[in-house]
Length: 127
Image (cartoon, rainbow, N blue to C red; front, side, top):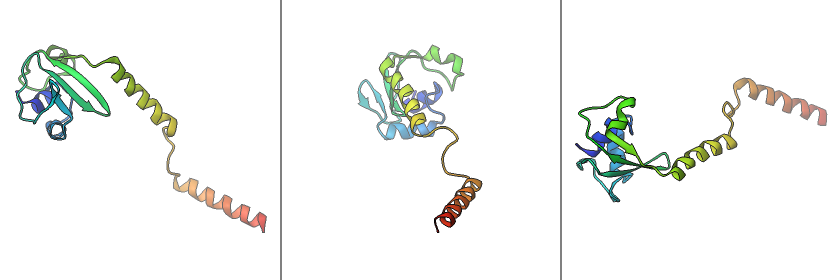
């Protein structure tokens, strides 16, 4: 089975074209070597996937005939990602929350009007 099709089948990528692009960019490695999307995968291969700034490592156990359900993924691959890499994911989530809380961002039209009104009132008081 092709590596891009395998990664799509075991749900590491949402679509097969995303998996293909990841292979072309060099984000997928088998036994330490960057691979093309057409490279065949065999049981006992170790695949390293760089996704969302995290290096995931999986070991191929078997080849599925087509895309499998989330509960059945463990039959076809084993996740051997080091815990340090998974802890980085938690740190990334916390750092994003630190810089910008959810729901904050650009002011709404109402907020902008209130700010403009506040600026006008302070101008009038200063004059």
